[in-house]
Each structure stands twice: as C-alpha cells, then as structure tokens.
Image 1 (cartoon, rainbow, N blue to C red):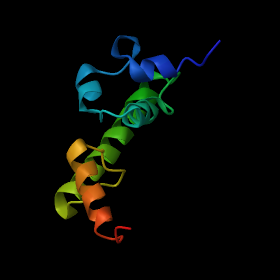
Image 2: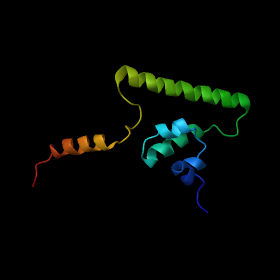
Image 3: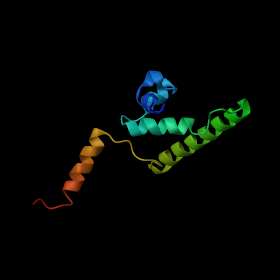
Image 4: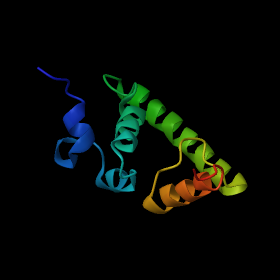
Amino acid sequence: EGTKFALPALYFPKSLMLAKIWKACPWTTNGNEQAHCSINQDGTNLTLLGGVMHGQDYDEQAATSIDIHNAYGMNICDRGSTHAHRTLWDISRLGQYPLL
C-alpha cells in the first residue's frame, strides 16, 4: 500500500484544500505538496480552540509573508518556476559560459 499523501497532492478532487488555494498553487508538484504540508502540518486532531488558534497563527504568518513581499519585493520561499522565468534564467546562464 502506498502513502495517502501522493494522490491528494496531485489530484484536486481527493485533496482537502479549498479550490482557491489549489488554483493559486504553482504548476509544479513541489508547490502543491508544499501547500498541503503548510496547511496540514500540525492542524489535525485539535480541539476547537486549538484549531482556531492554529488558524490564527497560520494567518499571521501568511500576512507577514505578504507584507515582506509587498515592502521589499522578495519572497520568503522559493520562487514559482514559470516558463518565462526559466527561459530568462537559461539565457542569463548562457552569457556566463563561453561557447565551445
């Protein structure tokens, strides 16, 4: 038997995530897995008060992350890889090395 984590991380109907969170995740599987980890890390089997406090803690951390990004223009986590970003990265790397 495999782990119960792989299918929910890749297939939305099996996921416990809200649709808006799923759609906001990067297109890579790493992004989806990280979002699952962030949401479900220690928020299971809590009392109602514990769940509310955990949710408040998570929201405060997310707000801090957004504030840092808005104020300084930098992400506190890995940048989501897009086709445009990868292409620019490849072009900049080509300029660093002489062609043989």
